[in-house]
Length: 542
Image 1 (cartoon, one colour):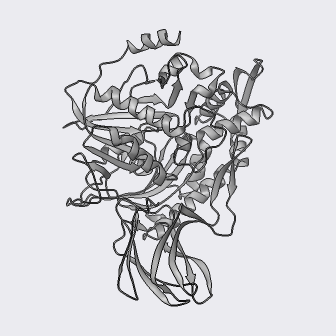
Image 2 (cartoon, one colour):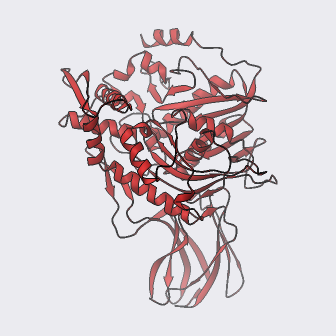
């Protein structure tokens, strides 16, 4: 039955794009919806692509993957799953949804119960989209987006996914920067961007450079002329300057779980219950809904009993307040502004607030953010398509000038206090690539020391929040007030000492840089014999 319906859907494949066309493809992989937009060469008008049977509407593909039981390694994508009503099947191990949340996450919670690993699901979706479009048009450039909170790991995954794609240029931009460009504002303005998606909240302050004779922004180029770039380009740098940013791994799908738990506190929510909760959330987020108005939805619970979900706008707002969502948004706002202040920004410099993502449309959140930002004008581009459209506007050339989302620290020996300490190398909000190296001199911590170990870590900002899952329910918790530092990549870099070092004596001088791929680079010399020191393969920070 599954195969017959799939064949019928495949026959409806559209011909909205011409095989003779060539241009730039933008893919914004979302937790709920993936947006696909194409721009022909010499055209100023981007086109949302209709890709039946996997697209719900032009440019919008549900972020769903289903592993077919009929054939091994056979998958259904997006709208195919909804059309076949597989979304409501009792065996949900074959279904992968909300997988973007777990790409780049250090731990995958048991709430994700699909047999398809999150990275595999994302790869299947991107490759399926690519195969359908590249068979019809010539894609000369691919532009991709990445969230702020897991940018480093997500970027690594995205680059690996695209290694097999036959395209000469690949560019990458973080989602808030793309959203800022998608708002269609003139260069020269400073924007606060709130991107409230299905699984993440990203916030950033972006200065759209250009205007008054200056060039407009561009994206970070990952591949050019078929070759992977190693920071080599003679082109003039044009930038969208990110002044500050912060992110939290929580989003609209978590609100759905909170609603479901509020209405059925003693049940594990089924997909039917979660989708009904999502519908309630969307209807109660309309501006003209009165606070006391109650909206009802009929569904069946785990025991196949018919039940009615009832929720008012006031009750929804109480759920969000009780779960600490507004407090988390306030902390993200403070972190973003404080980070931007390190780049000579003041809140009174803010020109507009840009809202993208479905969660940003909730009136309680909009009003709260308006109060925080001193009621500067709000810009609301199409919440689903804005990021992909903005990514297209960031025509690749060299890179987006960015800032560190988190700081970088080095664990080293403190001669004065005779103990190991975490020494800050780079602070959150510091621009990268760095313009000049940071110099550090390290001494031996014991007599006859044979090597100096470098341990690199990311400090967690005091007052930051993190999301944990308790019995499958997302819970926002404040990170302990004591500063916590997490080792980067859990690796230790060992630098041999020859001759061995003596306690308290200076041994090596190191220069720390961050390159245009956000990689930490270390070079230096042994002060006792002038031998060069080079540390490689440190990977991405951010």
